[in-house]
Image 1 (tube, helix red, strand yellow):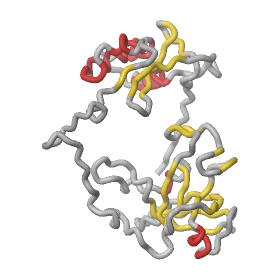
Image 2 (spheres, helix red, strand yellow; image 1 turned 45 degrees about the horizontal axis):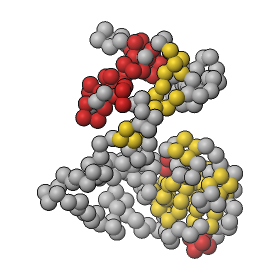
Image 3 (spheres, one colour; image 1 turned 135 degrees about the horizontal axis):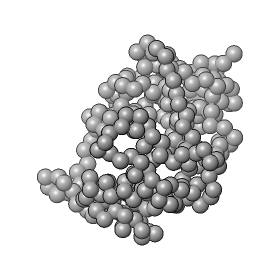
Image 4 (cartoon, one colour; image 1 turned 90 degrees about the horizontal axis):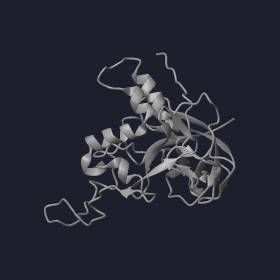
Length: 260
């Protein structure tokens, strides 16, 4: 199988976005469920950079559709917001006017309003099927650790802004694996030693992340910790939460191999 990856450099959110109808802004949702406008402040790093909407529009026009005016949408983002408002009026009605408020506006969240769509009208807490059994993988296997992937304090989703994690005292790199001291001793590993993580999902698919530095840390015995997206290659695509289908990135079976 031949695989190819395409890197499409685009304008960052901090860069001024000039399109056919003038300077544009995009909208974002923060971690509290509030929408607000994001305006670029600096000149683009290159005149050749395209905005994300422009890139999507150009890809779309590789196979033209007379019903969709991609050029108009990528030239005036207000049209995109109007389309969003028309598609999801319960959330985005009058989108273009409401987004002018510097404070933004809140996404309707029933929990915030103490409204519970349950038979008794109250919040219901449901225990998981089992805390001791993984529906995909056994938790206890000889020589296998459960990898928990995390992000650093200066990271937003998969965007990494620096290499110092003040939350865990890691400096200068993200290529680390945090281990319980007893697990280190059992494997004859020393602080600072370089190792590889090998996927141990038992499906005969080779998954490897190489060149991680061992760090002694207060993690439960039988577990280890690494950063994502660096450790994403170790996660099987079929290993996800039953209901939400979220990748089970807190429960990845791995083995540790010393590097020569």
